[in-house]
Each structure stands twice: as C-alpha cells, then as structure tokens.
Amino acid sequence: MFGAILPSRPVLTNLSTITPTQFALTFPSSPPFSHIVVFLLPGNLLPPDTAAAVYIQFPGSPEFKFLGAIGNEKQSAIFIVHGGISGLANGAAAARAGDGVGEDADVMLDDDAPPANGVIPGAMMMGDVNLGISIEPIASIQAQLASLQASQPTSASTALVKRPPSTKVLAQRIIKNAFNFLASFAGGQGGKEVVPLRSFQDWWVKFERRIENDPGFLERDEDG
Image (cartoon, rainbow, N blue to C red):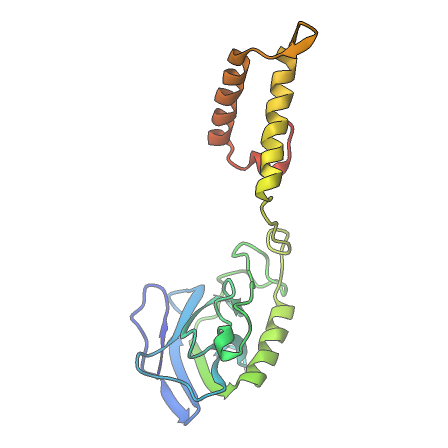
C-alpha cells in the first residue's frame, strides 16, 4: 500500500503489515541519508477522514519519532532526517487541506542549522532503521503536526522568512536610485533645473550593470 525512497537506494515497497492499519519497513542506516520520501502506491486510497502518519525509529533509540503524514490529496511527502533529528521538509510532510491535515504548512528546516540537542547533522548510529506508517483519524494527526511544527529547531536563516518588497516599493526605489544619480548632473537653464539626456543614459547603463551584478540590491533599500 505504501512505498519509500532513500537517495541512492532502490525503491522500497516491501512493508510488513502489522495490523490492517499499521505497516512497518526496516532498512540499514548505511549508506547515510538525510531525506526520505514516503508515498502511497498507485491505486491505493485511504479510508475517508483518515491520513497516514509516518514514524521513524533510529538505531539505538527505543522510541518512534513522528515525521508527518500523507493523505489521499497529497500522496507523497519528503522528510528531512538527520541522525535522530527528524522533521518536515519544506512543509511537504503535511497532507493537503483536502484531507484536513494542515494547509501545506510552511515548515522549513535549514540543512546547515545546528540541531537543538547537539547531534551533528548526518551522524547516525549503525544498525537498522524502522519506518512505521499508521492510518489514523485526521484529528489525531492534526494535533501531532501542530506539536511537531512547534518543536522544530530554527536558525537565523529560517526563523523569519522575509517577504520580497511590493511592485510599488520596487518602483519607488528605482526612482530614488535614478534621482540620486541624476541630481548631481542637474544644471540651471532659464530658471529651471535641467538634466542632460546623456546623464539619464549613463544612469540606465549603470543601473542595468548593477542589476546584473547584484540582482537583490533593490530589496535591501540601499541608496544607489
């Protein structure tokens, strides 16, 4: 009913059926891996108002850790797994709103962020990893997803996601950049300030060059 993919390994579909709603898969922790994909096999659907919760047990650990869930509307998910540190990969582990499990939550993990408990990313004990899949009521999985998202480690690069400036703000910054450059070329003529057309052309060449070399400079609200 389910399958799993680990980088550089064959697709795994030989899950054992523990109960009609619980399935398990065991595989070696070597070669090391940092992501795992879990998916519903084609032609399979979950019962109404349920989703498939995904759990993992690392070598040397007595407990299964909740990774997230998949469902009928989102039949696959990518999970980040770092030697005992587990979680959602860019929100992919939450089943879509059609299943009632989250809203494709924007949970982001930084692969370079130090884990909260000091475990080095990628460091995993040798042995067997157990993957468990349990078909559960959506309400139960929603509660686990909320708890998981609240407990995710954050770093400076992922704690806050900066939204890009609006079109209006970008236009204002372009005008500001042009004004700052052209103001120094303004000269008096007939009681009015006049800027030579050549100066505007020079500004445009300079502006294009800066966009090519530093595409994000307008987002930083710097003086040109």
